[in-house]
Length: 379
Ligand SMILES: *Cc1c(COP(=O)(O)O)cnc(C)c1O
Image 1 (cartoon, helix red, strand yellow):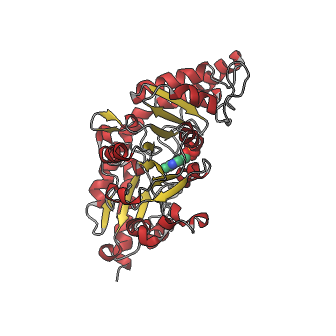
Image 2 (tube, rainbow, N blue to C red):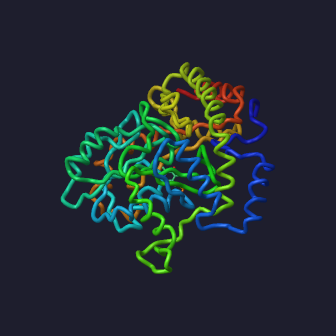
Image 3 (cartoon, rainbow, N blue to C red):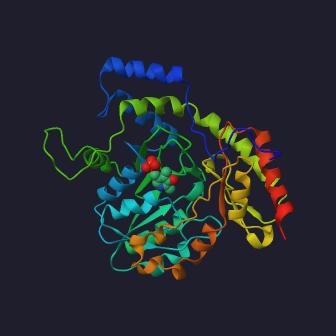
């Protein structure tokens, strides 16, 4: 078809340091013969990240999911945790693996984050925590969540997988709640191929998390608690040291791309931009739009399919709610009556191609094609 991209355009390309730089890191690691277990590169990355994120306490893990799982474990929680259905499966799976029961709360129609007006009605005697997600980098209403948590004596954990490096006002996002998780998966803005971290204000958690990610083994080879193996290795840390040097430039490029998307999409009826923070408040992780079928004239699914014909692969992210997992069918809060906004949004949301290497011409072309598809198909 005319206007088809020669190469497929995906929603993401991993941020990759020059291979030479990575090779230099690898040579040092090879010479040291220290490949994992809190080696020098791991320690160096922890220090670099604390500086970059402006956070006093940070622990690295081999992925974000195990970081979250063990972060929850470190708080000794029992019972029910109020959370969002509009997230990546890992958020609620981390609850499952701790024997905690999710209680699904509906989401806010603008930010897609947990709707703080609906949290209190879900609190019972069994509630022990709130697990909220800064979805697509949009900030949760952290102050309201904190107030509710204080009132009912609940812990607060944030899944910040989409919010790396961002601020709320002038405060780093990781300073809110008891613990915040960041993911360093290859698709995330900053990556260690696979990896993740927890950040927290209570420095006493540091030792417990070190035990939890290393079989609960203390220095004397005693097992003092039931841990797992969730350590980031030296190779991943080395890739991370080089990748972190590229993050600021990548953010700047994505800032420019975002501006072009905003200008071009502003002309199209029925499209709303969901990720509209900017500057230090923005994580530049995703560029997400919402398609209102009545106003736009076509459904989100239709646009998603049509764009494929031009070699453009957007993502219906998240089109499946976690509350729809079959093992939650008996849970009262997973009923769709309880989650009307989440169900509506799941049908409207679309994540657009978004990475520093994406040319501005490509961005313009993608937006023009959306207009063209609308013109040619709407009834
Ligand atoms: C990526 C992601 C995770 C999981 O992180 P991994 O590092 O891939 O284990 C968890 N929650 C959200 C919202 C994510 O996007």
